[in-house]
Every structure is written in structure tokens, then in C-alpha cells.
Image (cartoon, rainbow, N blue to C red; front, side, top):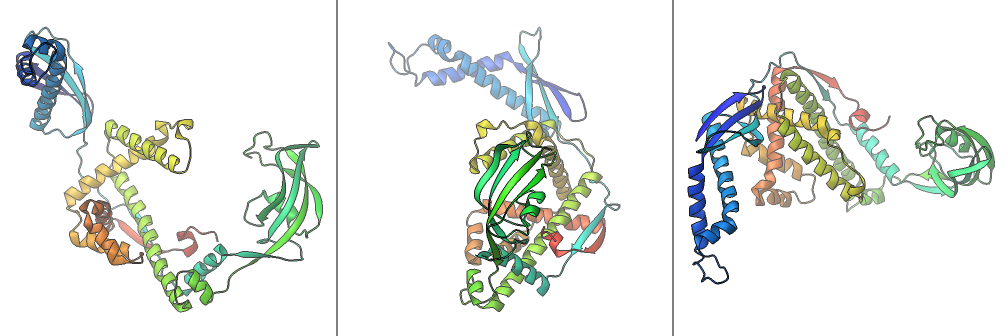
Length: 434
């Protein structure tokens, strides 16, 4: 076996491999003879089939298998000897040669980039701060009450947050258009379920009233034949219902899972859950900034092969997600380019994180993993049961270990970068509308 290496570009490598034909033929012959010991064929006793027949029937397959195994062995020895970290899989190409004793190939592949983690002293990271108080608990209770809203009929003009039931008919140039008609149609005013001009026309009307009004559809309206078009609607308000929010009492607390209906206990649980969620969201915002800082301070090239593999993984995940939502994946062709940027970012971060963890010795400790498992378990009814589930099979801890390593990286970056605390707004942090 002989091998030489030539560099084509920064990450691509070409390795020339040479395999002795005699070695392949010898191994093939031995393999066919072993096969013949148990081979059966018409007209021959088991194990007595002539070698010439065995070779005729199975020689090509045996030669292919031996050659493939030899290539794997020679390639492995070559990259190991030259300390090359292969990314993805090599592309094997046969070479034209005049040799009668050797078969020659070229293996083209990419290697992992070699780099030293960049300087983070100039990176700026904003750390949100927020203390959960009674006001945040009250806001959360208001949201929970609205999620359990009921409606009662009232004899007055419709106002925002009322639910109305209407009949409507839309016409364009005097002719009813598709999708512009409904009977006993319910919607809540002020939630953006209908176009603003439509809601404005309904607001202020009482049950039994009818009206006709003009409406111009937005230029970006999803129905292209109506986009930017002026139409006329006829509506009849059939019912106006006011929102009724449940009172915060023992019954409400029971509906929230507090068996004895203790309102104070309910507030305490909400506060504890909020603190966990606020902590999680703050950590996520900091982690996003840390990852961005790592990418900016480490402008590396990444192997195309790894990006392509990640694209395929993301495409498969998208297909599974669509199938779980009841969508027919075969009717929705998924394009690789949709995932190219995301895949490249994920591969880049993976390589940078691996190098930082190795260089700075930021591996997760068993104590860290245990603490995280216990914290995660607190949001379940039986924490001890959840902890036992994690430790029943070690592979279940891999995801937790990965998060622990990321946390170590975040802490390390925060110790290097310029960090400024900034008070966070509860509604913004929780993604709620003001």
C-alpha cells in the first residue's frame, strides 16, 4: 500500500491510494474457499462444489467486498498516519494507471477546520434582569382568567372584547364573491379575527340592527382576486355577548389544580412557575447573544459535507413535524435550500463549541447534570419519579449533559466579554402584547 496527500483548498484533501491486486485476489480466494465449505449446488454434495463454479457464481461479489474492505483499511491507515480529522465521508474515484500489479484510487474528502478560539474581550452582551413580584403574578392571573372566559347576552351596543354573532354578505360590483358570506358567524371584537374596517363597522351596533358599508381589501390580502379591491358588505347583528371573567376564588383555584382551593397556595405556585420561566427565558436570551459572539469571534470555514448532512437531518425533522400535524408530505416538496443557512449556523456553532469545550476543559460534571435533572423534575407532580426515570437509562441524560456543557460555555464567555445588566420588561420577556 502506498498513499500520498495533496491539498486542493482550505478544507478539502485528496489522498491517493494504491492496493496490490495480488492481495485482493489472495483474500478473495480464501473467502471463496471458506464459502465453499458449506455451499450447496445441484449435483454436488454439500461442501464439495468445485472452486471454479464457486468463483463463477460469487467471484465478482467477493472481489467487490474485499476491495471495499481494503479501501477502508488503507484509507483509515493513511488519515490516521497523517493525523487528518475526516469530516463526512470520502468520495472514492478510480485512477487511470498503467500498473499491472496495483489498483489506484483517489479519496477526496474534507477535514475539520483547525483554529484557536478567538478573543472575546470586545464582545458586548446584555444581561436582562427581572424580579418576579405580586404585579407579575396578577398579570398572569388575568391571562389565566381570560383563557377561561365565558359570555352572556347583553342588550347594548357591541364594544371591544364582546363576542358578536352576525350574518354577512359581501359583494363586488354587485355580485356576491366566494368566501364573502356566512350565517351565525361568531367572533370577538378587538382580537383581529376580522379586518379592522369590518370590526369598526360592527362595533357600536346592537342585536337586530343591520347596516351596509364599503370596505377596501389590503393590497397584500391572501385572496389575490380581492387584494386591493373595493367591496360592499351587508351585515345583520344577531347577538351581542359580554365577556364574563371567573372570579379568583376557591373554585378558580381548584380548576388550576389546587385540590383544597387555597387561593394563597395557587398564587404561590404561579409565582414559583413564573420564576422558573423568567429564569429560563433570561438564560435563553443570554445564550443567544453568547452564541452570536462566538460566531463573530471565530470566522471559520465549515465542511460542506457536514452542512449537507445537517440539511438532510433538518429536512427529515420537518417532514416528521408535518406528518404529526396531519399534513401530506408527498404533496409538499421540501427544498434543501430552505435549511441551508440554519444548517451552516448549527454546524459552525457545533465546531466552535467543541473546540472551546476541549480547549477550556468545560465538560459537564455529574454534579451539574444531577442538579439540572432535579430542577427539571420540580415542574412535575412527582419529582422523584422523574429523576429515577432519567437515571434508569444513562442515554436519557445526554440531552441534559449537552445543556450543562452549553451553560459552562456561557459562563466562560460571560467571564471574558463586556456584560451589562439591563432591567427587562415582563410583558416583552414573556412575549405578551402590552
